Length: 111
Image 1 (cartoon, rainbow, N blue to C red):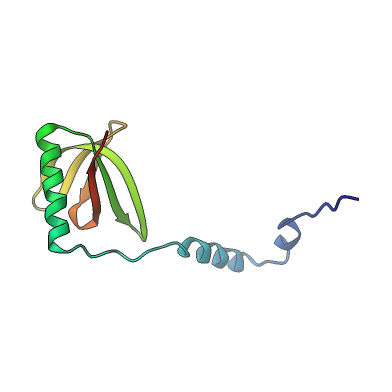
Image 2 (image 1 turned 180 degrees about the vertical axis):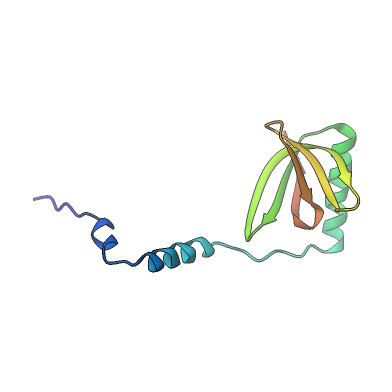
């Protein structure tokens, strides 16, 4: 005899919408991380790799912090906004992205 359980469906009717929203928020916040603080040496290394990538028009792999999560994408740096302290990047899909230097965690030269 096989037991056919309805899973979460049987509990849905007993949960209030506020409770469902709170549970979803708890799950979303469970994997958030605090924004890391880079030391001077790490910042200099990021700047060196970015400068090298700009000179050679190399594709770079950017890892940055956004709203509690690490995100990664590839692109080529085509400019720097001095006022905003941000990089102007053309990503692998051809979209223009502006990324704050303060949000950068790691930059590597891509393949």
